[in-house]
Image 1 (tube, protein in one colour):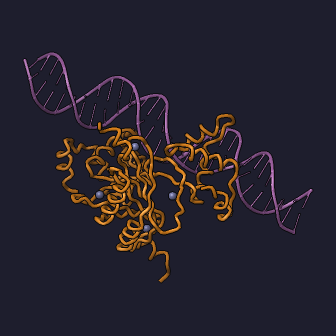
Image 2: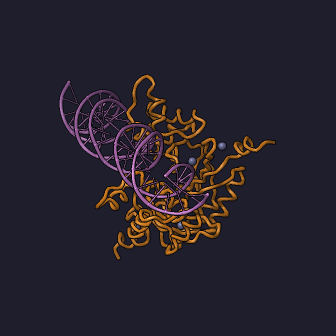
Image 3: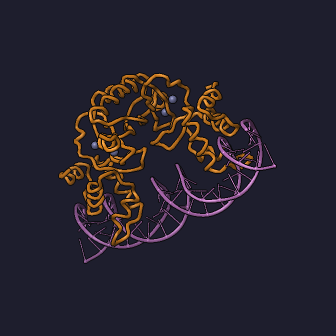
Length: 143
Length: 143
DNA sequence: GTCACTATGTTATGTTGTAACGCTCACGGT
DNA sequence: ACCGTGAGCGTTACAACATAACATAGTGAC
Ligand SMILES: [Zn+2]
Ligand SMILES: [Zn+2]
Ligand SMILES: [Zn+2]
Ligand SMILES: [Zn+2]
């Protein structure tokens, strides 16, 4: 995460000021942000067009520095290495909006096996589970 | 699938003409359709407003008669019973746009276990895998 | 008849994401 | 120095996806 520059360079691109600002804004947020949230947060003094934000998001996703939550149309920074072939699972709390990113080799294997059974060649995976996080459960139930 | 009416009744709702038409349009399509595809297909003689289509889609999803593909913003009919607690996996072909729906108890178990490990109480799941279907692979590779 | 409820229509608007094109800057070749 | 090339971002306009607010039509209970 502190090595974002290296990761970008390895991908043949750079961590420009704007890209860094997007990354920092996402890191500073306690939950995933929408593209227009970023437009607003980055455009305080000088307006940034949505298209610019989307371009940055594409680059960062491609570099593996952030993820997109398809069920919410939001984006969050990634703190993982993703070196293994583990599947990434996003636990999306419908109460607080927070997202926990966990990985699982087991799910990756199941997923690959399931796909292979139908002759499907798998690529990108989106595994998103909506529910209630531990914190919100504790807050909701008295004692 | 032929018992859509019963399913709706069991849910305390009805399979109205409009809802039936949406269901039939999705069934007739060879791939998932977007809401505005449906607006167009159903509005040939008499215009249907987007909001009406979205309302119908909500009801059908609630009844379990159709599914939404979050990564594509499209909808497809469901031919499964979904009686077990198996997880549903959508294999989305990035080449032809077709979607294969498969279920897996194994993935459901892994998913539940993974969520439980963090104290997360899981609800709805969206497991979507993008890739290339068997048919498109065969068409792409000569011989 | 009146009331409540479900389903849909009408109009307008909000949210999310892209297309097309131009400008600037850094860099490498000559 | 000059030019070409490519990356990155700006500007404008628009497409695609989704919902809010309110009105209307039918159905059945009482
Ligand atoms: Zn990650
Ligand atoms: Zn929560
Ligand atoms: Zn299904
Ligand atoms: Zn295909």
